[in-house]
Length: 336
Ligand SMILES: [Zn+2]
Image (cartoon, rainbow, N blue to C red):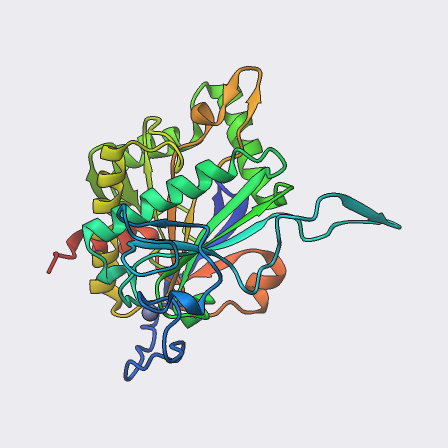
């Protein structure tokens, strides 16, 4: 039986339609269509990229040479660039001249093509690099929203196979993102709680969509999952944001993220996905900061099916796998 579910986090609806369930066709053989030869993101090929903005490298090693763990470069095909300020009016319309920042974080020095291959040390180095970049860009008061995401695999929109993360910082808050924080703000004002706190409390009572807990963090399949096997990692209590996560919390998030990806891989095989990391705007209205309203959140969206006209024209996602079934299968996935 299908159900239309209201997604309280996103103020949209989702159609849970188990009768549409079919096994996605696995790739018959693994070929890497996105790998240029040689790979500009691999260690040793630093001269093939623009000069680095930041890198995690040991003392004594030089910028744009080998020896690094993670490396951040400006996006060659940038959607926005940091130098051009004001907005313009054009009749009814208003536009910005591509003001912002677009960076690529090269996640690992070795040629990994999936986060599922990462070691704990690699996941920790990746999170610390994101923490540094977001912390740095947040000091620029002209930038009010930072989108932090990964596209892994061709179906998720990746154009390079070497694991990388993208960061786009903007001078305006995208409507969808602004709405998320507006709802969080209104919910906090009426209830005194963060929306994610209430959602996780409910999830812990019912247990049916919870996958795993590590320390303060929980992975679960959201009630109104728009994607089959969609997973959210978050915490009941305030634990900081990506730019303020403590060292021990980074270790815990890295463990839970890798464990969750391993569970997904055991269920789905080689799978493509988008990953989003929350970066709330720094609100300070009536003494309420983003720490009160928002929880650090990672959202994993496996891309098993292509979206068609219905999803694109109504905004309602059709998801053939109920989140209860997805969570059960992921809970039962035993680690290798
Ligand atoms: Zn590479």
